[in-house]
Length: 310
Image (cartoon, rainbow, N blue to C red; front, side, top):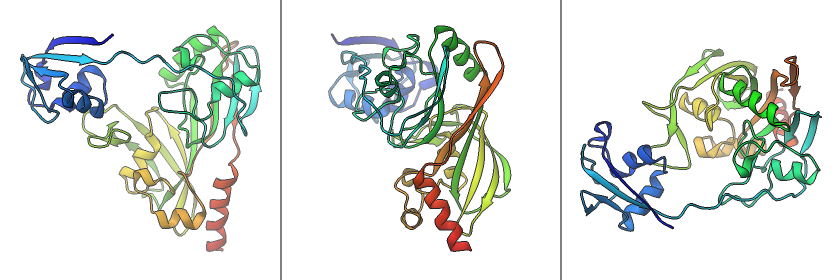
C-alpha cells in the first residue's frame, strides 16, 4: 500500500531544490525523489513539483511514497575465502575477502558475511534489522579485512555502544597516490552524500563530522602506504578524505584514482584493507585485538612498486 505524507516545508529548506530538500526531509536519495517528482507524486501546495523546483517555507507538501520493500532475507551460502579468526560464545571475528558484502541489501545478489557464517553453522545475535542481525559495523564489498559480528544479544548491545562511543580501535592500511604532506596528520572534514552522484559521498559543508588520522608507513615513487586510524566511521570515509586532499586510494576509480597506475600494479579495486580491530571484550572487559594479513592482490601491488623502486 502506498504511503501519503502531508507536511509543511520547514523554514530551513526554504529555497532549496525539491530533490535536495526532500532527500533531507524524508531520508530518501535524490534519485528516488527525482523519480517520484517525474511520476507526479510530489505536490507543492497542490501543484505537481519538478525535481529542480524550489521549496517555499510554509508551503504544503504531499508526497506519495511507493510501498515499502520487504528486507532481503539472509541465505546460508558458503563464502569462499571467508576466514574465522576467533570465535567464542559472544563474538565471531572474521577476515572478509574481496567482493563480499556484510549483509543482504536491495540490488545485491552476491555473497555476504552473515550468509557465510550461517552456512558455517555460526549462530549470531538476533538483535538488529532482520537482514543484518548481529552486525555492529560494516566494510564495503570492495574492502577486505578484519571485522567482528555479535553472537549474543549482550555482545550486540555492548559492541554497538562501543562503536558509537568511539572506544574501538579501527586501523586500516591504504595505498594512496602521491605523498601526503605532512606525512603524518589528520583530515577533519564533514562527509555526506555527493550532491550530484547518489552512489558516492563527498566532503560537503554541513555534512556529518568525520575525522581520519594517518601516518605514512612506506613511501614509493608513485604512491604511499599509510596507516589510518578512524575516529569516526562514515561510509567511504577513508576513500573520500584522501580523494579530497588529492591522494585517492590507488585503484579507486570511483574517487578519481589514476587508471594507468591501477593497471600497472594489477588492481581492479581500491587498495584499502582493515588491518587491525581492537575492543573491550563484551563478556569481561579485557582488551582484545585482531589482525588481518594483506590479500594477494594488495600484496602484489606493493611488490610491483617495491620492484620498480628497487
